Length: 69
Image 1 (cartoon, rainbow, N blue to C red):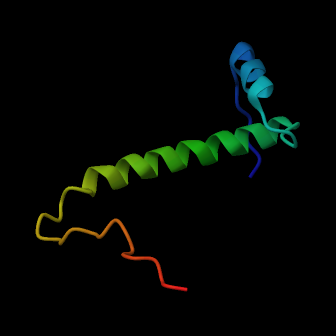
Image 2 (image 1 turned 30 degrees about the vertical axis):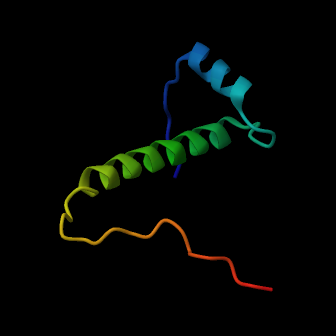
């Protein structure tokens, strides 16, 4: 999709400074920012519904004893 957007110059320069190697085009940086935004929003949404299963049993945190060799 092609779209025209206006970005704050200072914010874009800061994002470009923090960009990982390979993110050298403006479209790459905007794409990475959108992916991060969506991931953060999905995480928050998942956290909100996380407490809605009070009858669910606890999930074991360890696998038990390591196998004997």
